[in-house]
Image (cartoon, rainbow, N blue to C red; front, side, top):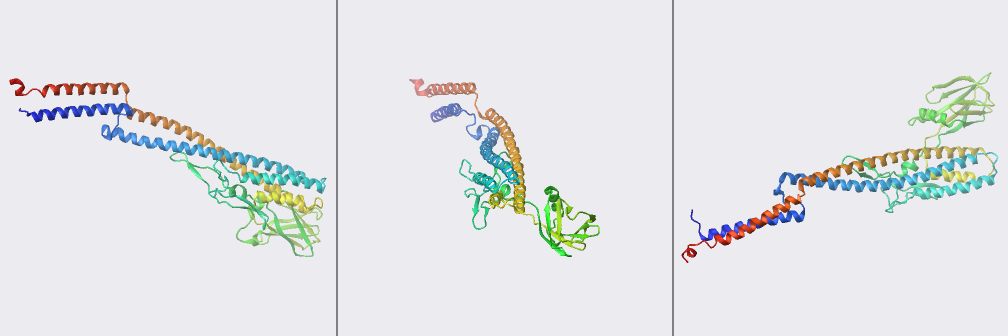
Amino acid sequence: MRLSTNQIFSQGVDSILETQERLTKAQDRIVNQTRLLTPSDDPAATAQVMRLNERIELTKQYDTNGSVLTNHLNTEEVALNSIKIAMDRLKVLTIQAGSGSLADADRVGLGFEVDSIRKEVLDTMNTRNANGDHIFSGFQSSIEPFVFNASTQVYDYMGDEGELKLQISSSVKLSAGDNGKKLFEDVDARLQTTGVSVTAGAGTGGIVTIESQAAFDIFHKANYDTTTPANNVYDVTYGGPPDTYSVTNSGTGAVMVAATPFSPTQGANFEGMNIKGQGTGPGSVVSFTLSTPEKKNILTTINDLHKALNVGGGYTPALNEALKDSMVQITNSANQIAVVQASLGGRLNVVDSILSSNLEINHANQKTRSDLAEIDYSEAVTDMMKQESALEAAQATFGRVSRLSLFDFIR
């Protein structure tokens, strides 16, 4: 086979350039600490490394979200614990205020502490996190959630019902907080009776006293009709002699209590209630209505309690009812906070568990990526030295071959 001088020079240059390219690639692998400089180096490994890089970056974001979530939940937990302590103190003060031995001045003194607690609770409900966002405003985090309305004398919730949720794994998204409406606005108010009146007979009136709130609440919740108001009216019919009473649902006609003997001075007992007719006799009917269930802001309840303690006039029936209202509302609020606190603890446990799992998964992904992409320094240095020797050999042989011409031989 005949080779022209041009072919000899061309092949020599190509050989040197190819060897230089291999040497440069071997050097780049060492500098970049990877054996995958281009996808063509190992297409299958490159695809796996790309997927692993994506998972590792996602896991880093999950860890960041988890840290933010933990901070938010811890801030809320501290706030709720402070409010829970305030609720416990309010219970004590309400019980003290119910003592008949206290003078009006003593109740005014209790009122001062109640008002201080109101201010403390309001400040806590308007708590901000490290970013300056109100933690109980829902999505309206820049708005102060609870504001006193001077015209209505109640505290209005200015936020919304949104709950920020953060993704902490591919399939788990947790709430980073609870809105103030659910926590403090939508607290069940005390269930009562309304519209006590004489609807038949010679009676002049009637008094319904709730003596067992727990028993009455069970009855109310089981029997309150949201669609037909007439079914919430009950008739107490008096008969005799001897003195008897019976209780009938005015709307449905259902007999709740058949004719039962009782003492008019002690009153008739029915589902936690004591009912006393005034001027009633056989044939008289005293009717009462189950109150409509309501929600009441705990701040408004504290404010109402403060007002009741400053009315004066001794331990009146109105004060007694106000204290009962406050005690039920405070208890319901404390129970609601306790439920959310338990939820917070559960969420914090889930975050800890998932972040720990994410850490292990991330370590496994990084190790797999290292096995696929990172270089073995001994192998890489050896390869570079081999390519360097090959380049030196190519350069040396080119110099010798380029001189092997007929003219050199004749000379």
